[in-house]
Image (cartoon, rainbow, N blue to C red; front, side):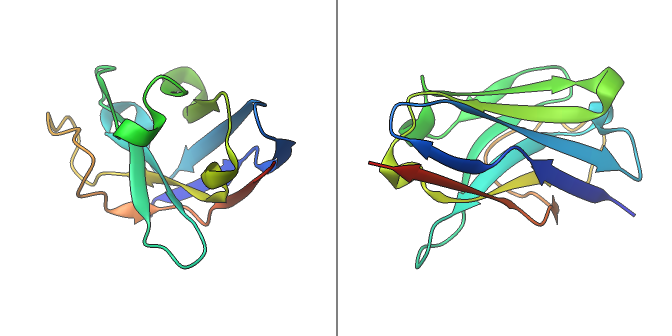
Length: 124
């Protein structure tokens, strides 16, 4: 059973940085595409960033240049470094994983497992 646990959320001012972490249990995350998504109040969940098992990344336009996804397979952890945060980044942030090992599809779609989320609030 795959379990994803996010941490690192909090309340920050606009322009600040935060680093979110996601630890996986149940199976090593090094073989799987990992991603981050978020859901703001009243909005649908959106995928923000993904990283393939080989380290290739993809980002949605709204976070390109500000957010960076990375992974440490030895720690079974994936990170989301968020810089230059804006009030519109306020949301619950979720870690996600695709089901198939060593898939070459690391696009921002088709994630199968999700964590419980961590709240990020950016004040103006």
